[in-house]
Amino acid sequence: MQRSSIFFSFIFMLASNANALTLPPVPSEPIYFDPPVVKADQKMQEMSCYQVDKAINQLHPYRYSYKPSFYKDDANKAATALIMFDNIPIVQGWLGIGYLGYSALVEEKEDRRQLQVEQQISALQRIKAEKHCYE
Image (cartoon, rainbow, N blue to C red):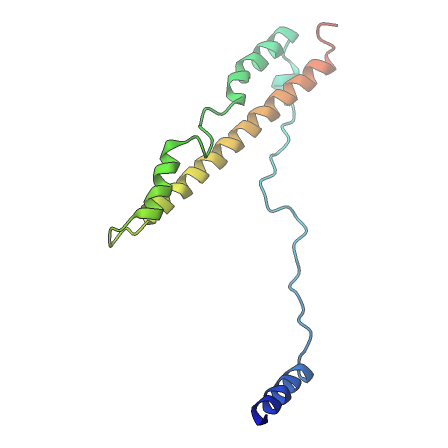
């Protein structure tokens, strides 16, 4: 009985001395990559409708990623297996973790490249619309 009263008095003492915690300021800016909007320069403005179409057609193959997705990439499966089942004393799964980090970095670079190409195509399509091509 004595221990429970000591425990409750200790809890009451902590509760009476408790101060409200203030949270640090949360940034309201986006933390993810925001692609810059490509604006048409003077060289793009001087292109004819045929040249604009040709430039758009040349950029189309670069819109797509030829890297397999995470779950279809066999190297990622092997890296995950290395993490799970690796018993080598020095490595201990770090090789698999390192490869997964590298794979994520390559995928991020590929995504940024695709966004940049999409922005260039959008700029050329805006020029095409401004010139009223093929109307």
